[in-house]
Length: 400
Image (cartoon, rainbow, N blue to C red; front, side, top):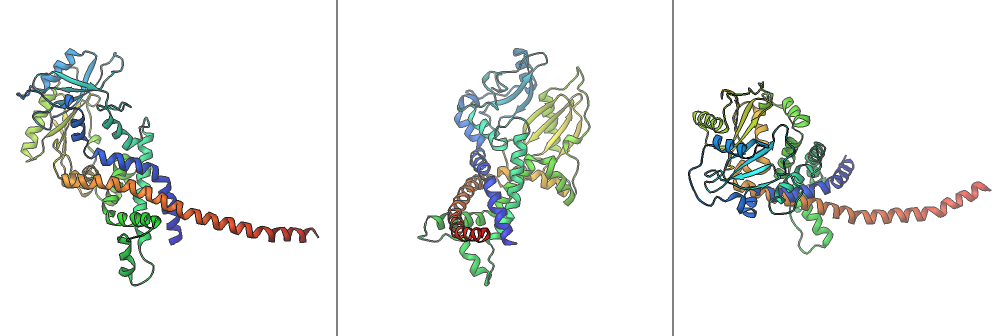
């Protein structure tokens, strides 16, 4: 049994290593993406003069009037009074693709502070973090193939967490006396032992964080293919917000972004939510608004969401973080666990450290495999060399 686990861990780890190195390093940076993006691009995020914000509906209407080739699909609300709001836009029917799909707007004046194409393959300060984000979850492979690929890697990683842990368990007694050294670094050890100790000890100390990040990666990349079907077999779950019935968007009498936010805020107040609206999406093909909360990344069980009828503002569905069936709570926890927001800043720091350890585990694992592989190859060559004379003698006798 142990020999089989060794093979699974060895070759599964080698197959995952390049992907986990990329995911770990990029993930450790992306944990602080909002702060880093604002620091790298102050001209996009900083509002020069503090003033009363205008109605969101009037801002969206003004932008669409000023730029008739586009329509606003989503608005990200500013986390602070001195920050711009962000609008994601798409080409209006009959117009060619847009050069940029994200606008940064002064909420008081309506001035467009800057633009960028969010998923562009560019290395300048405006695009580097969105680029790394796409690399993190899809390797920048177009379509869903990259997302599925990283999801499969996460699935193997989740299983390998248990395999790797099992391989650290001692086979002899007394159990703790044999297991305790694996949790520590041996002083004065050589390079091979140093890398082996890092690989085993860091994996043990951070095992819960590594497992949760791996599991949440499966949930985010393969939600409908793997995570929710398995979760539904283990725990009771409710239909997702996307499974609610949709309506056709009427040609007129449609409420604006501002009205949708106001309705969402009143509903949140009635339900005693402490979170603030973070993003508003106009789902034109469904005739609905989706309002997501938790703009300041507060610690908690995830972000609550409201689905509104875009024609009359009626509440279609409420998805409250930490509420509902057991499976709903677990599913809602996956994103805040992955980002570390479940416990606030300490959690984000832990996830950042975990990303670095993921890369370190992959690098040290490859190194240990390579150092062990060289003696194995030498032994095979020596055995092959010593067996050749006997084989030749056998051939001679057979010929006689």
